[in-house]
Picture 1 (cartoon, one colour):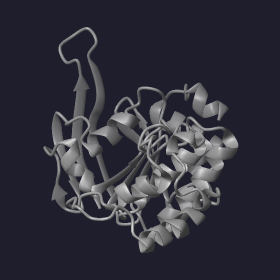
Picture 2 (picture 1 turned 180 degrees about the vertical axis):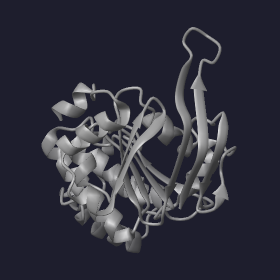
Picture 3 (picture 1 turned 120 degrees about the horizontal axis):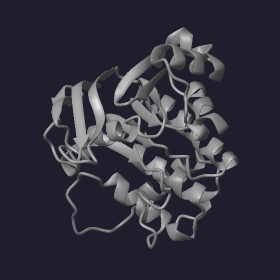
Length: 264
């Protein structure tokens, strides 16, 4: 479903601020894979996700989504294949519009807009059932402005909107990092439910080692723009944070230095 072939990305080339963010990264995700991505600050996690999304075009290499070469496609033309949830809960929703209006926008994504009544009775009933999955009581607040919701409620709604059209690839960019632990756990639980229900191919970036281990069927670790660990299957099921740190030190010859990952 996703093929990343030997991609490179350097920021500010030829200057004192030159930074090699991706250095020959190759990665293949099969249909239904749920891959968590971890690494220290500056390892290349967000650059990898943004390269796949088309936010930044790569310098070299190739990116294919479901066999379609999107390497040179701009971000807005890749959006038809992707669902994305950002770190900031304020992104991804329209604050001045109601919950049902936001869902209606997500449902009409990629379609021609016609002059017709906004939300049908059947759609409204569909949205009620979808919102029940979140277990946040939002199904009883369809007309509430999204700007009145808490950060966790908005992030859960954004997740629902990003997956409403069942994208070929779901990108989760540290989507629980700005939430308190209890709310983050709820959003991750909802993520698992939706991803498993719809068999969505998913790439989730996180700073939290425990979350990276607990979710998904595969874990990769980046360092200096390289993939240095790729753990899957039975090995991942029995993985602990101590095991992960030991494997990192063995693969890199260094100690893991991300305070946020260790503290989390």
